[in-house]
Image (cartoon, rainbow, N blue to C red; front, side):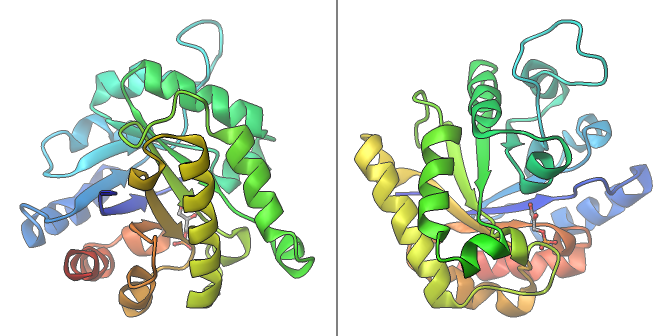
Length: 243
Ligand code: 13P
């Protein structure tokens, strides 16, 4: 069975003062019935170690060490207390030109360091409107998910680029179509493809979480803006717990 995961991606937000939000979240969910994964900026990972949540990085370098000023290796994230790392977020693909091959290499590096890779994929608005969503998903899955992926070391996050931070959410039929497609592709390629967690991401809020979690093959969410405040993220965790 896929694990249910409520994941928060803080992106480039969060100073030490904001850890109070995670303390409040921990008070509300001292022993969550689903996996809760918080991906704060890397500067805060070590400070999150005592929380009752899994902690993740937002990116890692493909190499284990070396002359790569400003980058962090997967082993460094693990050393700071992370058990997971996002790879291939659309903002990394856009801001830093990351290709599917880069994402696969980073995901392999994550696995080598014992981190779970949360591999992000999703179509742009032009691709959706051009009717190529499923072929874009196929290309990204084939190119970004390394052969060493298993349900234990890899999570797939479907994040339509046009839904990220926009307040626009696909219909439940659109989410269902893509998640079923991802599940089919994973099952074709991996012996344990049925067990991978597949998360939906893009403008998830407390008010829409329950209907998204009711969609087949949606095993949780990757949440940006609504993960920054305990008051916003707590209802999403609660919705997944009862889904
Ligand atoms: P929002 O929830 O702010 O739309 O962000 C989604 C996202 O990109 C999570 O990785």
